[in-house]
Structure formats: C-alpha cells, structure tokens
Length: 279
Length: 103
Image (tube, rainbow over all chains, first blue to last red; front, side, top):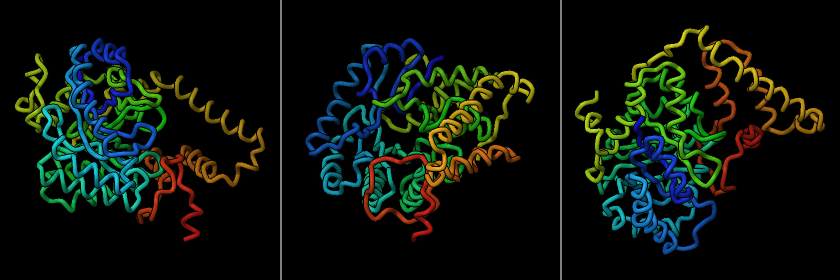
C-alpha cells in the first residue's frame, strides 16, 4: 500500500533504509529537525544540519523515488539553551523560505522547563507571524501528559495559528483527547518501548476514528524501524479493517494535512486521494 | 471528537488472534518481577519506579476498558509547574511521587 511517513529522521538512516521504504510503498517522507544525541555547540553547526536537510537529503531520497520534505526549528532537547535558541531563531526565517521546508518543527517541550517553554512560545509566535504549518514534539514517558497540557496551553494563546495547521506528534492514550478536542491533528508514532506499538495505534484509531490522525515511524538513531508504517498496515489488516480505511490513515490524511503547504506536491498517481475528494 | 470505528473482530476472534502473544507478555511481566525479587527484592521496594510498576500491575486486574489510561496516569508527572532548570536530558519512565510530598 502507498503511504507517506510524516516523521522520519532520515539523516540517521542508511540508503538501504530508503530502499526498504520505497519497496514497501513509501512515496514521501517529511523530516523534522531533532536532537542528534549530543548538543550542538554553535548556531553554525545547526545551520549545517539545516543545509543537510534542505540540500543533501532530498537528493538522497530522490534516488529511490521518494519525495523528501523537512521542518526546521530549534528542537526541544536543545531548546533549554536560550542563547543558542535565540541565535537559531534569528536565522530561521530565511531557511523557512527554502522550497522543501513545510513549516516549523519539530518544536516543543522535553523536560518541561521554564526555558523550554520560553523557546517554544517564541517559535509558535514565529510560525503564527509567518503563517507556517507546525509540527510539535511532545515529551516522552512520565513527562508526556504534563508537557502536552503545556503545549496546548501555549498554542491556545496564539489565536492566529489555526489548530488545523498544527500537528501535535507522539500522542498516546492519555493525551490524544486533549489534542483532538482542541482541533489539532494528532500524530501516532510507532516506536519500540517509548512511544506506541502498532497494536495500540490501531486501538486508538478504533476508539477515535481517523479524523485528524496521522501515523508515522519516527525512525532515528535509536532502536526504531524505517518500515514501521507498513507494519502498522499489516496490523490494520490483521484486525480486518477495510483497505479504504487503512489508505485514509496512511495516505489520504497525510496528503490532507501536508497539502496545506503550497510547497507540498501530491505524489503522482495519488490524485484520487487529494483533499478535495476526502471527507 | 472523531467518530469511533470499533474493531471488526468479535471478542472471541480477538482472543483467538491475540491470546498467545499476550500470554507471553504476561509471563514476561511475571519473570521480570521474579528476577527482581531473586536479586534482593527488598532493595527495590523503595525504588519509585518499581512502586508504581506494582501499582500498574494491580490496575491490570481491575475492571473496565480504561486500564491503559489509568496506568499511563499512574506513571505520569501529576504536577503542573515547569521545572525551574533542566535537571537531565531524558525521562526515566515513571514519576517519583516523593517529590510531590517534599514540596
């Protein structure tokens, strides 16, 4: 089945992973900026990373017929560093104009510190002012519920940012309702141990339906799977969900959300899944 | 709120399909608790992670279809105030409730 993975940190993956994704039907990936596992020491180092995401990575993906888009911003795990964050935000507007940048992301909170909230608030304000789509990271494990509540609180203070243009990612059972009830898109990320399994993701789709819900693999430098989405498709089939429902989740919904950016091109052959034809 | 789409599988079909792998998960949980006990379980009794883990195991035996939500909340930081400063880079999986008592 054709699919789009809206959250994949491909800079951490090999070209073999691109091949596996292409072989399993992946048409496009969107890659948010994230923490490399170590803290960058300078804004120049961060810009080199932006250059990799906007220049090298789309070419690498294209070799496998996969369209590559990105989201740029100050990632949550380094956002407690206010000085570096201010420097990154000073340079960010120019990068947001690049042709494959869909918006600001992944921004958000990690340990829910005062500094992280300040940096997050500034990035939300920038997205609002520059009319950008937003992809938001929510904290992991014991910090998720508190961090998601703060995320929603900050977003609600920015009335100019339409909730339907915001994807709140890494949703779980105890946070998905507050995301959907406030009009945002919810992302379910399939990741061993620290996020959700394919079985739990299907459970949430059965409970809440498919409206404004996306599913991604979130593969990165940790134990994770570049083909998590097709394995999720297998789990949906195991539960006997119809192909039309599965396609809505893994292809039509991503197209619907991402097409809000004029830079996103609907993959060839999927025109029937464009936003005008889905409810 | 979105419209729910219940599983097409009947309860019996769900059990038929998923019993074996969840039987295995149940045994893995038991094996982990036994392993900790054999290593000197009394020492882990005061570990906040194992305290909430045992609360979670008790919640499994409860009724209703919200066990997962209850366990998620047992493991979650219940406070609202942000941390004044970054203490560490990552989460550890459970909230130390003694922190609330100390505040």
